[in-house]
Amino acid sequence: MEAWRLPLSSSIRGKLISAGYTSLPSISSISSSDLARDVNITEEEAFEILRLAKQSSGSSSCNGSRSLINGAKNAWDMLHEEDSLPRITTSCSDLDSILGGGISCRDVTEIGGVPGIGKTQIGIQLSVNVQIPRECGGIGGKAIYIDTEGSFMVERALQIAEACVEDMEEYTGYMHKHFQANQVQMKPKDILENIFYFRVCSYTEQIALVNHLDKFISENKDVKVVIVDSITFHFRQDFDDLVQRTRVLSEMALKFMKLAKKFSLAVVLLNQVTTKYTEGSFQLALALGDSWSHSCTNRVILYWNGDERYAYIDKSPSLPSASASYTVTSRGLRNSSSSSKRVKMM
Image (cartoon, rainbow, N blue to C red):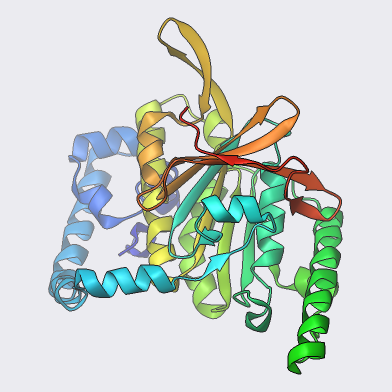
Protein backbone atom coordinates (compact mmCIF):
# COMPACT_ATOMS: atom_id res chain seq x y z
CA MET A 1 0.00 0.00 0.00
CA GLU A 2 1.16 3.53 -0.76
CA ALA A 3 1.62 6.10 2.02
CA TRP A 4 -0.60 8.63 0.27
CA ARG A 5 -3.61 6.34 0.84
CA LEU A 6 -3.37 6.71 4.63
CA PRO A 7 -6.19 8.82 6.17
CA LEU A 8 -3.96 11.83 6.89
CA SER A 9 -4.19 15.52 6.15
CA SER A 10 -2.84 16.66 2.78
CA SER A 11 -0.03 18.62 4.46
CA ILE A 12 1.19 15.57 6.41
CA ARG A 13 0.98 13.39 3.28
CA GLY A 14 2.99 15.99 1.36
CA LYS A 15 5.68 16.06 4.05
CA LEU A 16 5.90 12.24 4.07
CA ILE A 17 6.32 12.03 0.31
CA SER A 18 8.86 14.87 0.22
CA ALA A 19 10.93 13.08 2.87
CA GLY A 20 10.90 9.85 0.83
CA TYR A 21 8.32 7.90 2.84
CA THR A 22 6.12 6.77 -0.01
CA SER A 23 5.28 3.20 1.04
CA LEU A 24 4.12 1.52 4.27
CA PRO A 25 7.29 -0.59 4.71
CA SER A 26 9.44 2.55 4.63
CA ILE A 27 7.30 4.09 7.39
CA SER A 28 6.93 0.97 9.55
CA SER A 29 10.69 0.37 9.73
CA ILE A 30 11.50 3.63 11.57
CA SER A 31 10.98 4.93 15.11
CA SER A 32 8.55 7.72 15.92
CA SER A 33 11.33 10.09 16.95
CA ASP A 34 13.24 9.54 13.68
CA LEU A 35 10.04 9.94 11.66
CA ALA A 36 9.20 13.17 13.48
CA ARG A 37 12.68 14.55 12.80
CA ASP A 38 12.78 13.55 9.11
CA VAL A 39 9.28 14.77 8.30
CA ASN A 40 9.41 17.84 10.58
CA ILE A 41 6.29 16.99 12.58
CA THR A 42 5.53 16.47 16.27
CA GLU A 43 6.19 13.10 17.90
CA GLU A 44 2.45 12.73 18.60
CA GLU A 45 1.76 13.07 14.86
CA ALA A 46 4.49 10.54 14.16
CA PHE A 47 2.92 8.07 16.62
CA GLU A 48 -0.43 8.45 14.84
CA ILE A 49 1.17 7.87 11.41
CA LEU A 50 2.91 4.71 12.67
CA ARG A 51 -0.37 3.47 14.20
CA LEU A 52 -2.25 3.95 10.92
CA ALA A 53 0.58 2.35 8.93
CA LYS A 54 0.64 -0.69 11.23
CA GLN A 55 -3.14 -1.01 11.05
CA SER A 56 -3.13 -0.83 7.24
CA SER A 57 -0.24 -3.30 6.96
CA GLY A 58 -2.02 -5.77 9.21
CA SER A 59 -5.24 -5.65 7.21
CA SER A 60 -3.40 -6.49 3.98
CA SER A 61 -0.89 -9.04 5.31
CA CYS A 62 -3.06 -12.07 4.49
CA ASN A 63 -3.62 -10.96 0.92
CA GLY A 64 0.05 -10.12 0.59
CA SER A 65 1.24 -13.57 1.69
CA ARG A 66 -1.29 -15.29 -0.55
CA SER A 67 -0.17 -13.33 -3.63
CA LEU A 68 3.46 -14.16 -2.85
CA ILE A 69 2.69 -17.89 -2.83
CA ASN A 70 0.55 -17.71 -5.96
CA GLY A 71 3.27 -15.72 -7.72
CA ALA A 72 5.91 -18.45 -7.52
CA LYS A 73 7.46 -19.54 -10.84
CA ASN A 74 9.87 -22.27 -11.81
CA ALA A 75 13.20 -21.46 -13.43
CA TRP A 76 12.33 -23.22 -16.70
CA ASP A 77 9.30 -20.98 -17.26
CA MET A 78 11.39 -17.94 -16.37
CA LEU A 79 13.99 -18.90 -18.98
CA HIS A 80 11.34 -19.12 -21.70
CA GLU A 81 9.88 -15.79 -20.58
CA GLU A 82 13.29 -14.14 -20.89
CA ASP A 83 13.75 -15.55 -24.41
CA SER A 84 10.35 -14.28 -25.52
CA LEU A 85 10.56 -10.78 -24.04
CA PRO A 86 9.96 -8.03 -26.63
CA ARG A 87 12.75 -5.55 -27.24
CA ILE A 88 12.75 -1.98 -28.54
CA THR A 89 15.20 -1.30 -31.34
CA THR A 90 17.53 1.69 -31.08
CA SER A 91 17.75 1.98 -34.91
CA CYS A 92 21.47 1.22 -34.59
CA SER A 93 22.02 -2.47 -35.37
CA ASP A 94 25.45 -2.54 -33.70
CA LEU A 95 24.00 -1.13 -30.50
CA ASP A 96 21.02 -3.51 -30.71
CA SER A 97 23.46 -6.40 -31.09
CA ILE A 98 25.28 -5.81 -27.79
CA LEU A 99 21.91 -5.19 -26.09
CA GLY A 100 20.65 -8.62 -27.16
CA GLY A 101 18.29 -7.18 -29.78
CA GLY A 102 17.41 -3.82 -28.23
CA ILE A 103 16.17 -2.38 -24.93
CA SER A 104 14.47 -5.18 -23.01
CA CYS A 105 10.94 -4.86 -21.70
CA ARG A 106 10.38 -5.79 -18.01
CA ASP A 107 13.84 -4.36 -17.22
CA VAL A 108 15.09 -1.05 -15.83
CA THR A 109 17.95 0.18 -18.01
CA GLU A 110 20.18 3.08 -17.01
CA ILE A 111 21.97 4.99 -19.79
CA GLY A 112 24.53 7.58 -18.71
CA GLY A 113 27.23 9.74 -20.22
CA VAL A 114 28.75 13.18 -20.60
CA PRO A 115 26.76 16.14 -22.01
CA GLY A 116 26.41 16.05 -25.80
CA ILE A 117 26.95 12.29 -26.08
CA GLY A 118 23.35 11.67 -27.23
CA LYS A 119 21.37 10.57 -24.14
CA THR A 120 18.30 12.64 -25.01
CA GLN A 121 18.59 11.54 -28.66
CA ILE A 122 18.41 7.92 -27.51
CA GLY A 123 15.42 8.72 -25.29
CA ILE A 124 13.51 10.38 -28.16
CA GLN A 125 14.49 7.55 -30.53
CA LEU A 126 13.10 4.92 -28.14
CA SER A 127 9.86 6.88 -27.63
CA VAL A 128 9.37 6.74 -31.41
CA ASN A 129 10.61 3.20 -32.05
CA VAL A 130 8.41 1.63 -29.37
CA GLN A 131 5.49 2.45 -31.69
CA ILE A 132 6.76 0.44 -34.67
CA PRO A 133 3.91 -2.00 -35.46
CA ARG A 134 4.32 -5.73 -34.91
CA GLU A 135 4.05 -6.41 -38.64
CA CYS A 136 7.19 -4.28 -39.09
CA GLY A 137 9.09 -6.10 -36.34
CA GLY A 138 8.19 -3.71 -33.50
CA ILE A 139 5.97 -4.02 -30.44
CA GLY A 140 3.27 -1.45 -31.29
CA GLY A 141 3.32 0.39 -27.94
CA LYS A 142 3.18 3.94 -26.64
CA ALA A 143 5.71 5.99 -24.65
CA ILE A 144 5.85 8.08 -21.49
CA TYR A 145 8.58 10.74 -21.52
CA ILE A 146 9.36 12.38 -18.17
CA ASP A 147 11.48 15.48 -18.74
CA THR A 148 13.24 16.91 -15.68
CA GLU A 149 15.70 19.15 -17.53
CA GLY A 150 13.59 20.67 -20.29
CA SER A 151 15.73 18.96 -22.93
CA PHE A 152 12.95 17.22 -24.89
CA MET A 153 12.65 18.75 -28.39
CA VAL A 154 9.34 18.12 -30.12
CA GLU A 155 10.81 19.26 -33.45
CA ARG A 156 13.50 16.61 -33.11
CA ALA A 157 10.86 14.01 -32.20
CA LEU A 158 8.97 14.92 -35.40
CA GLN A 159 12.17 14.62 -37.44
CA ILE A 160 12.87 11.13 -36.07
CA ALA A 161 9.22 10.13 -36.46
CA GLU A 162 9.26 11.14 -40.14
CA ALA A 163 12.41 9.06 -40.71
CA CYS A 164 10.82 6.11 -38.89
CA VAL A 165 7.71 6.27 -41.08
CA GLU A 166 9.87 6.42 -44.22
CA ASP A 167 11.81 3.35 -43.06
CA MET A 168 8.56 1.47 -42.35
CA GLU A 169 7.14 2.40 -45.75
CA GLU A 170 10.29 1.13 -47.42
CA TYR A 171 10.12 -2.11 -45.43
CA THR A 172 6.41 -2.75 -46.07
CA GLY A 173 6.83 -1.77 -49.73
CA TYR A 174 9.41 -4.52 -50.12
CA MET A 175 7.24 -7.00 -48.17
CA HIS A 176 4.16 -6.07 -50.22
CA LYS A 177 6.05 -6.60 -53.45
CA HIS A 178 7.43 -10.02 -52.47
CA PHE A 179 4.99 -11.36 -49.85
CA GLN A 180 1.71 -9.45 -50.36
CA ALA A 181 2.05 -7.67 -47.01
CA ASN A 182 -0.11 -4.65 -46.10
CA GLN A 183 1.25 -1.13 -46.48
CA VAL A 184 1.92 0.79 -43.26
CA GLN A 185 -0.76 3.33 -42.31
CA MET A 186 1.10 5.16 -39.51
CA LYS A 187 1.88 8.88 -39.93
CA PRO A 188 4.34 11.11 -38.02
CA LYS A 189 1.37 12.83 -36.37
CA ASP A 190 0.19 9.47 -35.00
CA ILE A 191 3.61 8.85 -33.46
CA LEU A 192 3.72 12.23 -31.70
CA GLU A 193 0.19 11.68 -30.35
CA ASN A 194 1.36 8.45 -28.69
CA ILE A 195 4.17 10.09 -26.69
CA PHE A 196 2.81 11.15 -23.29
CA TYR A 197 5.05 14.02 -22.16
CA PHE A 198 5.43 15.13 -18.53
CA ARG A 199 7.55 18.12 -17.48
CA VAL A 200 8.57 18.03 -13.81
CA CYS A 201 10.29 20.96 -12.12
CA SER A 202 11.17 19.61 -8.65
CA TYR A 203 11.96 16.34 -6.94
CA THR A 204 8.58 16.43 -5.15
CA GLU A 205 6.81 16.64 -8.52
CA GLN A 206 8.98 13.77 -9.73
CA ILE A 207 8.03 11.60 -6.75
CA ALA A 208 4.34 12.45 -7.13
CA LEU A 209 4.39 11.59 -10.83
CA VAL A 210 6.14 8.26 -10.25
CA ASN A 211 3.48 7.42 -7.65
CA HIS A 212 0.79 8.23 -10.25
CA LEU A 213 2.30 6.15 -13.07
CA ASP A 214 0.67 2.86 -12.01
CA LYS A 215 -2.80 4.37 -12.37
CA PHE A 216 -1.92 6.19 -15.60
CA ILE A 217 -0.49 3.07 -17.27
CA SER A 218 -3.49 1.02 -16.11
CA GLU A 219 -5.65 3.47 -18.06
CA ASN A 220 -3.26 3.49 -21.06
CA LYS A 221 -2.30 -0.17 -21.32
CA ASP A 222 -0.40 0.21 -24.60
CA VAL A 223 2.43 2.08 -22.85
CA LYS A 224 5.57 -0.03 -23.32
CA VAL A 225 8.38 2.36 -22.38
CA VAL A 226 8.88 4.94 -19.62
CA ILE A 227 11.81 7.31 -20.19
CA VAL A 228 13.14 9.64 -17.48
CA ASP A 229 15.45 12.39 -18.79
CA SER A 230 17.20 12.63 -16.45
CA ILE A 231 16.69 10.72 -13.22
CA THR A 232 19.48 12.81 -11.66
CA PHE A 233 18.74 16.47 -12.22
CA HIS A 234 16.56 17.46 -9.23
CA PHE A 235 18.36 15.12 -6.84
CA ARG A 236 21.68 16.86 -7.47
CA GLN A 237 20.19 20.31 -6.95
CA ASP A 238 17.75 20.12 -4.04
CA PHE A 239 19.28 17.73 -1.49
CA ASP A 240 21.73 18.44 1.32
CA ASP A 241 20.84 15.29 3.32
CA LEU A 242 22.43 12.40 1.37
CA VAL A 243 20.80 9.75 3.59
CA GLN A 244 17.38 11.14 2.78
CA ARG A 245 18.29 11.34 -0.91
CA THR A 246 19.36 7.68 -0.93
CA ARG A 247 16.10 6.63 0.71
CA VAL A 248 13.98 8.62 -1.76
CA LEU A 249 15.89 7.26 -4.76
CA SER A 250 15.66 3.68 -3.48
CA GLU A 251 11.89 3.98 -3.13
CA MET A 252 11.66 5.42 -6.64
CA ALA A 253 13.85 2.67 -8.12
CA LEU A 254 11.67 0.01 -6.48
CA LYS A 255 8.55 1.56 -8.01
CA PHE A 256 10.14 1.56 -11.48
CA MET A 257 11.06 -2.13 -11.09
CA LYS A 258 7.50 -2.97 -10.08
CA LEU A 259 6.08 -1.04 -13.05
CA ALA A 260 8.42 -2.83 -15.47
CA LYS A 261 7.39 -6.26 -14.18
CA LYS A 262 3.68 -5.54 -13.74
CA PHE A 263 3.08 -4.04 -17.19
CA SER A 264 5.90 -5.79 -19.13
CA LEU A 265 7.38 -2.47 -20.19
CA ALA A 266 10.86 -1.01 -20.45
CA VAL A 267 12.00 1.69 -18.04
CA VAL A 268 14.92 3.78 -19.34
CA LEU A 269 16.62 6.12 -16.87
CA LEU A 270 19.01 8.65 -18.39
CA ASN A 271 21.78 9.72 -16.02
CA GLN A 272 24.43 12.43 -15.82
CA VAL A 273 28.09 12.07 -14.87
CA THR A 274 30.14 13.38 -11.98
CA THR A 275 33.76 13.18 -10.85
CA LYS A 276 34.89 10.47 -8.46
CA TYR A 277 38.23 10.26 -6.65
CA THR A 278 39.65 6.79 -7.34
CA GLU A 279 43.18 5.43 -7.06
CA GLY A 280 44.77 8.84 -6.53
CA SER A 281 43.01 10.72 -9.33
CA PHE A 282 39.63 12.14 -10.30
CA GLN A 283 37.68 10.09 -12.85
CA LEU A 284 34.27 10.46 -14.49
CA ALA A 285 31.52 8.26 -13.05
CA LEU A 286 27.74 8.14 -13.34
CA ALA A 287 25.98 10.36 -10.83
CA LEU A 288 24.10 9.37 -7.63
CA GLY A 289 26.82 7.16 -6.17
CA ASP A 290 27.58 3.46 -5.88
CA SER A 291 24.34 2.54 -4.08
CA TRP A 292 22.28 3.79 -7.04
CA SER A 293 24.17 1.48 -9.42
CA HIS A 294 22.34 -1.48 -7.85
CA SER A 295 18.92 0.00 -8.63
CA CYS A 296 18.89 -0.89 -12.34
CA THR A 297 18.91 -4.20 -14.18
CA ASN A 298 21.18 -3.00 -16.98
CA ARG A 299 23.66 -0.13 -17.09
CA VAL A 300 24.95 1.36 -20.35
CA ILE A 301 27.73 3.96 -20.33
CA LEU A 302 28.13 6.29 -23.32
CA TYR A 303 31.57 7.73 -24.01
CA TRP A 304 33.74 9.34 -26.67
CA ASN A 305 36.58 7.45 -28.36
CA GLY A 306 38.27 10.14 -30.40
CA ASP A 307 35.51 11.65 -32.52
CA GLU A 308 33.24 8.61 -32.28
CA ARG A 309 30.44 7.85 -29.85
CA TYR A 310 30.49 4.46 -28.12
CA ALA A 311 28.10 2.58 -25.84
CA TYR A 312 29.46 0.12 -23.29
CA ILE A 313 27.51 -2.56 -21.37
CA ASP A 314 28.82 -1.88 -17.88
CA LYS A 315 26.39 -4.09 -15.95
CA SER A 316 23.81 -6.71 -16.92
CA PRO A 317 22.77 -10.10 -15.53
CA SER A 318 22.33 -11.57 -19.01
CA LEU A 319 24.57 -9.60 -21.40
CA PRO A 320 28.37 -9.77 -21.70
CA SER A 321 30.45 -6.61 -21.34
CA ALA A 322 30.89 -5.21 -24.85
CA SER A 323 30.96 -1.89 -26.67
CA ALA A 324 29.61 -0.66 -29.98
CA SER A 325 29.94 2.60 -31.87
CA TYR A 326 26.93 4.64 -32.94
CA THR A 327 26.27 8.00 -34.53
CA VAL A 328 23.52 10.62 -34.25
CA THR A 329 22.21 11.75 -37.64
CA SER A 330 19.36 13.94 -38.83
CA ARG A 331 17.30 10.73 -39.06
CA GLY A 332 18.15 9.60 -35.53
CA LEU A 333 20.53 6.94 -34.20
CA ARG A 334 22.37 4.91 -36.82
CA ASN A 335 25.46 2.73 -37.20
CA SER A 336 28.75 4.60 -37.22
CA SER A 337 30.40 4.90 -40.64
CA SER A 338 33.48 3.14 -39.27
CA SER A 339 31.32 0.65 -37.38
CA SER A 340 33.22 -1.74 -35.18
CA LYS A 341 32.05 -3.83 -32.25
CA ARG A 342 34.55 -4.98 -29.69
CA VAL A 343 34.81 -6.34 -26.18
CA LYS A 344 36.17 -3.59 -23.96
CA MET A 345 36.91 -3.76 -20.26
CA MET A 346 36.75 -0.35 -18.55
